[in-house]
Length: 219
Image 1 (cartoon, rainbow, N blue to C red):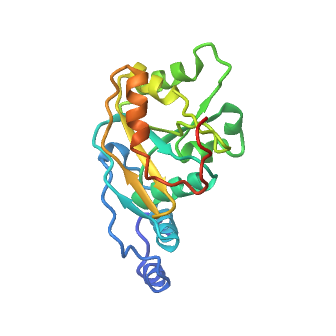
Image 2: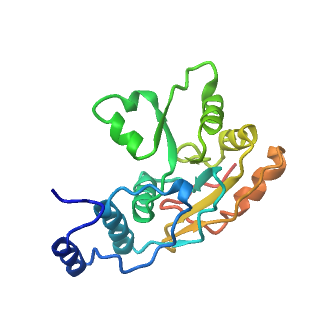
Image 3: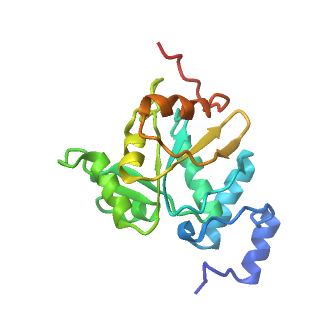
């Protein structure tokens, strides 16, 4: 039986010849968010990033709880890149998904990827469900797209901010820059509770981050 956590020498040498070896160094993630999935998944994620020309700038903070926001969100490829990063650095990041998606046969796999099922019709709402998740977990990195949709939206939704304020956690801005092929991990942002003040400051961090597709200008 092949141990996916420690590949046999013959398999390792095969991956090395094919370019799937761990030639590029990746900064370790904090222990609270380290999720080993096996050498094959790690190699797959790293190979994808290398073939696509992506590199990671910055580091994941050691804080045990925060909301991670990814912008601009203009394509389904954002999810692919995000999963590749998670595999490459063995990162445990959680994300929200419609509860109906988590039924058999895909539920277990989506949870393994970090998915959290959410019933948007529940009385406590999405914000309440997320706050409860933060309160219940010793560590949680919740990834959200502040634009909410990849189709033409130029305005950010405030849900990510309200979650961070209600859960009393900071925000980690992350940019997927398709022009430079850089995943930018920016410094933590600590919300003041004043959305009108803070939102422009956060959005300004993405001024030079280019999504796969350009957004229309806000009217």
